[in-house]
Amino acid sequence: MRCIIVGGAGFIGLHLAERLLAAGYTVRVFDLRDGDTPRHRDIEWVRGDFLDTGSVRGALAGCDAVFHLAWTTLPKSSNDDPAADVETNVMGTLRLLEAWRGNRGKFVFVSSGGTVYGVPRTVPIAEDHPTQPISSYGITKLTIEKYLELYRVLHGLDYYVLRLANPFGERQRVETGQGAVTAFLHRARRGEPVEIWGDGRVVRDYIYIGDIADALARTLDYRGSRRVVNIGSGIGRDLNQLAAAIESVTGRRLERRYLPGRGFDVPANVLDISLARAELGWRPATSFEEGLARTLASLSNA
Image (cartoon, rainbow, N blue to C red; front, side, top):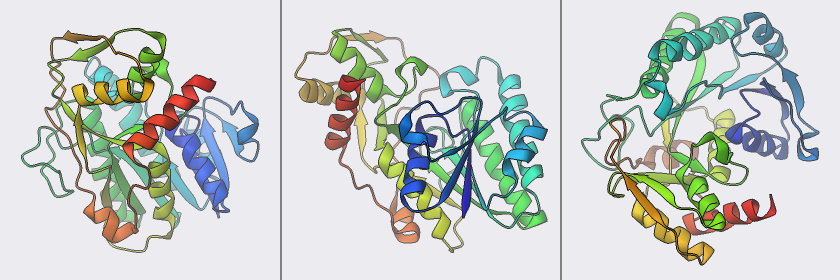
């Protein structure tokens, strides 16, 4: 089976590619960037723009499954230009779906368990919780979920959506500003202060990247009827607890600078992962502490 990872040169995509290769799949990555390390020599690289329909069609040729990871915005930046968020991510994905239409292979979409639910009514958050996102990022992710179901009804699309919690782990790019765990570790190593929006009591669900890659890979063998599944640790930690854990793993005091809270930050987000256990036979295999240690080691060796 040949799997294509659209937007696969990023943090999640490369870990997924390695997981698929280890399982014996043939892997093609379609992205604006090329692979640049010997670790990825077994990946077939196709360079192209997700928004270029011709390039996308060519990249999909001969593939048996698609993992859609390409996205142009972040939760914190999406509200700055919602129109651009829609024009790139929604329209780009619809063109991708049109290019894939008629193919009977699986289409796996990486959605955002951290944003599509909005302010939670209950915690942990199950898949049937109401979806009221308060960022354009969450709205566009949810929009794609709806279009996937439309394409299933109209065209028989075999799709699955994994709503991810907050990923962290080796090779997460510090310069993107996404990922509190890696950003805090990076600053702790350099003796720099961390910025905490609000009073530090915002709770998030942090999940190690290797466990995410495993969950995504398991969708290839899944034959069940559940189309949307949460993937997280199922455990909530606030930012003050995260800072304390990083102090423990680094052995260094972490200076904290508290800033006014941000409007798009929900007070708590912890995912109920019981469906992932039941349907995918998946559960996190890496503890938060072990994930922290691995991430720190990768930063030290960078």
